[in-house]
Image 1 (cartoon, one colour):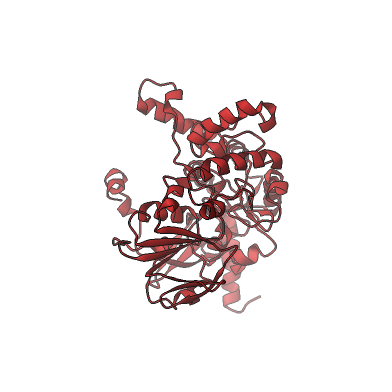
Image 2 (cartoon, helix red, strand yellow):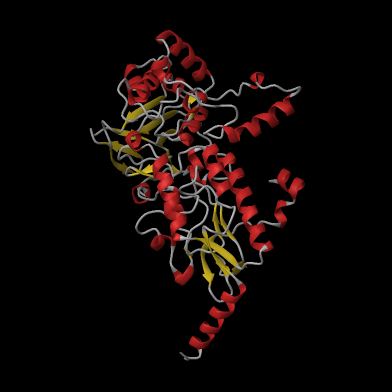
Length: 460
């Protein structure tokens, strides 16, 4: 933060230690009235939601956690002070990306560390960006080229473009060699693999089996190995975002680090000094880390308390399903823009790349609104319906089935999965005219204001 402030004076433009508790669009002034937790209100012509995809944690476990006498820390609200694992019996509930990081750091330091796992994490090695393959006179030029190339890859990750061939187009020997190369580059194995990874279940199984074989070789104990990298997958590879492995699996070779497979023995109860699983086994814990992930982006946005025209909330607007225009705007919510929300690439891409694309579009739209002297815009229902069809067309329903995960909810897409280049093309076409928008001009303010004034006086 200090560095950013020195470079761009960010503290002049940010209000710290305040929480937004609601926002209402005023049809009288055509401004957004944003309510804060200190009972103050901010007014703005434009409102941008940039809360991200991991802003709220689930609370279903909170009641049970209160039974514990020991320390409880949520990764989403981690203390600013140093937390020491030394000499403590620690439980980590969940195996998301944060859990992977904590295990790697605390495994060598804790007295004991037990991971309560519902789903294994298909973690991949920390990615190595092969800058040697990029032409350039120095590292700065290579980095600039890599950043520019992000816009050409579906994932939005630098220079990681999927293979142009399918899994079974090559010999087994050639495929093994290529998979080894991809695996050594970490996330490249996921985003730069054969082009049928997410369309052909047999090809997906080849990728999973390779991952399992490489991962199982790192784990000595058979029971732990079968839990952390089972021979038979319980979900398709890539449905859940892989963590970054920097010695994660090797930690379970330590005698003080264990895993409990909650599919076999779920948590039965929390007691004051530990956790009891369904087979009746008690494990003592001084500290519990509920690394159970976050609510999906749709629930995050609904919780903002945003109300548009006629006081309609996001929850009411989405009662029959999520609808957006380009994942950026919503009908009935004038001048309201969304970054990394539903029906955009968001976390199905490299988030910084998605943000770059969307911020440029939002800035361009605001500039056009100002130049055209408009009060505001919001997309038409027809434009949202057209985009909704494209989101579903890009969604690989056969691949996801009826699963609920970070990318899908009961078999329905949360994000646009067509990739960054296609998304960039779509939004470039979507801002050329106002044809896809309902435009609010000055005269509509006057008409509406006069009508509201008459109503306030009891006139018809």
